[in-house]
Structures are given as C-alpha cells and as structure tokens.
Amino acid sequence: MRYGGAKPGYRTMVDPLYAAHQSFIYSQAGAKSVREAVKTAAEEAERAALATVKMDAQSGRASYVNKSLLTKPDPGAVALTGWLKAIAEVL
Image 1 (cartoon, rainbow, N blue to C red):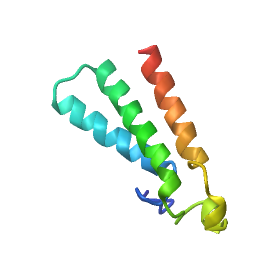
Image 2 (tube, rainbow, N blue to C red):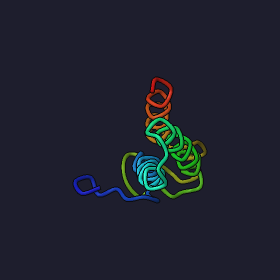
Image 3 (tube, rainbow, N blue to C red):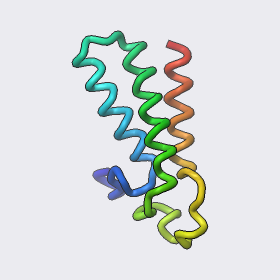
C-alpha cells in the first residue's frame, strides 16, 4: 500500500491480503492456534477476493478496463487467496 498506492476497496490483491491480516491478528488475540488462525485468515481472504467483483477498479491494470467488462473477481486477489489456502493446508 505504501509504494503501490493500492488500498483496501481498490479491487486489487490488497483486498484479500488486508482481510487475511486483520483476521489473523484478531484470531491471535483470541488465542487461537497458528494453524486455526491461518485457516480463518485464508477463508476471510477468499470472501474478500470474491467481493472484488462488486468493486470499481481504482488501481492496477484493471483500472484501465471498461467497468462493464469486469465481471469476475480480481485475478491477483484470487491468486493470493490460493497461496493462503495452500499455506493453511500444509500447516
């Protein structure tokens, strides 16, 4: 966010990353195990990635595309969710 300028709500991979971070911090404060916290964070990231469908692209390559063509979740957001789910699976 500091260097690229993207913020939560901009329809980028920052959306699921931020959701996962917030979830992980909250889970750790609730004394969940790291394994449970990562699994919960991955689930929150997936929800946030799917929510990018309803967002206007304000950063990244998608911001140059006609809004009517953005009918699927942000690809970067979906990819990041896949990484987090894979991490949760191997813990």
